[in-house]
Image (cartoon, rainbow, N blue to C red; front, side, top):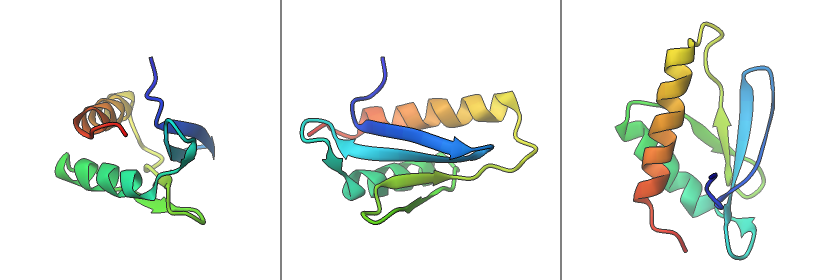
Length: 87
């Protein structure tokens, strides 16, 4: 099951944007994006935020990204989101 705080995922090639929202209100959640970015930094993953509300995670891995590294990112992101209380 996906996390209800993930609104939209889109991108081109390896440039990916993930919108984080308040799951109940479906409104942009820039504070959640900041928490995820800081949590991923602790896991040694650097990403940023973008968009008019600052709630879109900006994921730009190198072209030489391996499946193992992609799996590490997904696992770390789930770990970080699981640590952040919902609502």
